[in-house]
Length: 460
Image (cartoon, rainbow, N blue to C red; front, side, top):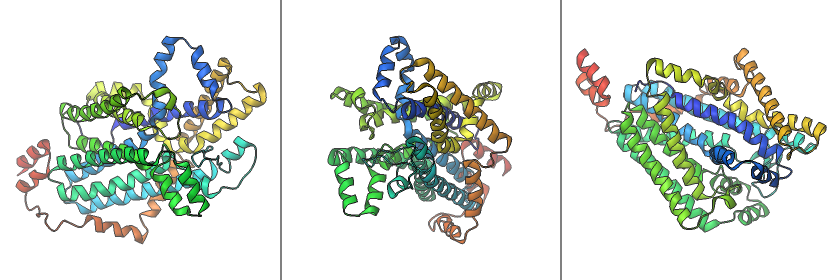
């Protein structure tokens, strides 16, 4: 495997998921929101073979956690590459730390702004909340944002928090075990399993979160309410979504060590088998998928299924797009080039997708009325939505992403890293007192991969 700054497979998976989200949210949050039963009715009308063909797309509608998984892989892959090639370059390591933290903080700021202005309705509090622009358009009434609309959880928040937490754990672990990345990989996967185990325990102990939520609200314990919402009651809660991030980090760190695909596959598919095996045990114990499929809190059996399937998906994509070489790789990448357009604008799609879809949906309602049971009009709606997004993404590319959320994050990050408080992150990069100094090329080879080891010896 040739080490790249970015994994092509991550861009492709992210781009596919963003294109999918545009379609999925338009259907479940617009077309079928007034009559949720219409979705089942529409599915019943389709031929069995067609339903079987689209079943994978139905399953990945539960994959909100995949973005934390991707964040974990990307963070560990970049950090592992730096620690492998520059184990004693504290300036380079610290620069990565600062940029990673600044990026995560800017994504969190985008998340807060999104909750205020653009997010779709949320029901995780036990009652609906709305944003200023999109929410007002959805409900045809203007309401100022409240504490509950500001604190609604979302994928954007879990991406930011996953980036911060995994960066801290990775830096601490690699600092102590940079000679033995296998030890760090094992630690990351152990943390992931621990988070999944804690999540199962929480589900069994707490059960329905609404009584606790109502009690905290009645007692004006808003800070505890904020913390509780991040830990437990939504499909974006850190338990177990953070576990997806740590599992991804273990895979990303393994890939950063330039291992053979055989070695990578042995590790990755082993864990995929473990998670799918746990899901299988739930099925044998009587768990039914359909009755729980659309719950606000994705049941733990389905979370184990998601984790296993996500590992398999990224492993296949890594084999196709990152372990291939030369013309074969370029040919494959050219076929999915359009997905990178969605990947490069993923934050903007996250933020503006509800507003765009709501505006078009209201236009269709004014002309056709409720069209959820009219397959032809639904298809027309989806095609027009696709054309709008194609135009918007092309427009952002034409103006070099100016005004997009990506542009805001990049420029905000540049400003943040200049703040005095970010100098404190250098503390994380002080050498370990027990770490021996690297004095010559013969010692330097200890820290390197086999390929770089040969190069070091030759130069010596």
